[in-house]
Each structure stands twice: as structure tokens, then as C-alpha cells.
Image (cartoon, rainbow, N blue to C red):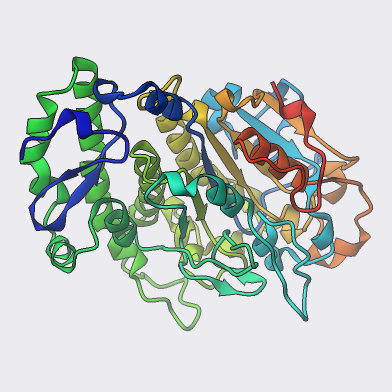
Length: 466
């Protein structure tokens, strides 16, 4: 097949026999009309990541404080990251850490019940009637989703929708309905790179490589690219191949049957690398989805609250027991270090993803992919599942008008006053905080969504704006 160069744009695919199709990044060789080039230059993306069970917050007089307290020491541009976050140090000028933000409607609700409202700010309550609202990722998807093949990529480690106040997903539709998340890397890969063709899916299930089916057309296309685009194309194909291999490896771990009893002491036939490989693969799939402009909106719920699911085994990546237990064993010898070591593992993989975006030039546009992507990372819990003072990091989006390289502290929250606090003391917290909805509203506006209100907030955070 000889590809017509004039027909190639960001929506085109490399097509082969058997129903395979590979979405392509934008190439300068086929920049097309001025209008098309302008559209590429305006491209903005959103990715949101959720960490359950809160973060380590030892008191200042605890020997573990300097190394393992999640929140930075210092303020403004003069802040120091602990070992929980220092894998992100090379990215400090492309990120902002926040404290003192939370959703007012659920501040007195136990943290195990609050993942549902992380991106909505709705009053989901701790019991009784349940009603949610649209999540900010879906609000942005409604704004930009028609411009891509996949309106939004909704992912989680545990998969599905979960239950009210026990969500397995961060994404909620306009009517407040939970959008089920996909946790099988193979299905996500097929969504991105395989046409809806039963024969194609069957052949891939037999370990046939999608790239092997397409290499003839790929080499034909490569000849017509500029030298710069040839390097971009080769790097892209290498990325797809690498991810394809990781997908197969990750399948073994995610398909592990869950125990019905406490078998943490048993060998569950997984290696320490299996959960790390899985997390890397999920991040890599988001990268490829963005790089091919298959979608501009993605969410990944790294784990669900309370545990009792496949995500509870992610701590095996660093040789630790069930993830949820780590948050309850901080007062035991080495407890803060163990919990912090798990958080550091997640920071490493999140940093790997951000660095990948930073090192990739925007396809067909200006700056890097990170410059045009807002990446929100955080939790609806802080110390001991406390529904206050959410640990939050926003990275990227420099070309959207976001100012970075700072640690912003809001409200009158004294972190040390709630450090080490147990769940039973949740109603005794008297510190004042700002609504997290202000952060979400700021992000939506900088992404180009014309709205003056979100999550009950009509004010932005001006300190974030360049």
C-alpha cells in the first residue's frame, strides 16, 4: 500500500492486513493547512492520578520526620522534598506541591469513603443516600473529546466502577454515574491500536505482534518522512514495541486470583517486578495514547481505598506487605519508612512518566508534551485516612499558563497538628482549609473550558498563574 501523503494528518492510521491499525503521531512532513497546524499548536491534555490510603505524616519531633514526611519542608520556591518525593526533584521547576486544600462537603467523612469525590467535590456523604456529580476530567472530555478517537481513557488497577463510597474509578459522568475503569493493559492496548475486528483481536490474543503486521507499510511511510520525522517515527515504533512486550508481562500479575482469606504470608507466585511492571505499563499506555492523539484525557486510579483488591499488592514491588496495612502500621518499628518507601516507589514511576513527557517534543507543535499536559496527582486523604489537607501535586502545562517550581500552602492548616492523628479524631480537626475546587476550576480554565464555577467554587488560585 502506497500512502498518499496529502491524506495524512493527526487522525490517520498506519493500516495493515487483518484489521490492525496503528495511530500515528503528528509529523512536520504532513503539517497540512495552516488551520491544521494551528489546531495542533492549541492541543492540551489532562491526566489525573489517584493514590489511596493517605501519605506518611510523622510529627516534627519524630526521628522519621525529615526523611519520610510526605509534604515538603519550607514554602514557596524554597522547599525541600523528603525521600517520599525526591525522585521528582529533577522536575521541581515543572511542578507545584499543594497543602491545605480539601473538599468542604466531605471533610468530616472517613477517608475510605472519599475517593469518589476527588475530581467532583460532591457531597457524597459517609452513609445513606448517595449522589455524585460530573468529574473534572469528564467536563474537559466533553470540551475536547470529539477531536480525538477516544473521548477519555478511564483506567484503574482494580477495574470496574466499584461501589458508592468505594469507587474503583475517578471518572463520573454528567449525571454522577461512575464510569467503569479498565485495568487490563491488553484491552487498553487493543483500544488504542486494534480496529474493532474480531479476527484482529483473535490474532493478537495468539501473541501476534501488531507491529509485525504493519512493518511493511511502516517502512514504506518512513521513506517519505523528513529526517527529523524519521527519528520521531523510529522512537515511536520502539515505544509501541516496548509497551506491547510489557502488556504481555503485566497480564500475568493482573490476572492473579484474589485470595478470600488473609494469605499475605504465602507466596502468591508473583515476583517483585510484576507490580512495578504493571504500573509502568499503565503509565506507558497513557503516554502512547497522548503521543498518538488518540485521546487528550486520561485518569488512572492507582489503588482503591481500604484495600482488599489487586491494588493492595502493589507494595510487593518494593518487598513490602499489603499496601493498606502500611498506613496502619506506621507506629511499629520502621513503619514510617515502610509507608514512605511505598510512596517513593509510586513517585519514581510517576516521575518516569513526567520525564518521558518532558523529553518528547510536542508532535507537530511547540515545546514538549509535558508543556501541553496538566498532570494532577493526589489523594483525598492525608494522615491516617483523614479527609483533610489532601496531598496534591500538579505538574506540566507550562504552555497553558501555569506557574510552577513552588510549594503552595493554603488555609491555616498546621501540618504538625494533624500529623499522627488517628481516624477517631477526625471531627476534632479545627484548622481552616481552602476548597480543592479552586484548583480544579483553575485547571479547567487554563485548559480552555469556558466555565466560571466547578465543585461549588467560583474563584481560582491566582498563585498558580503565570
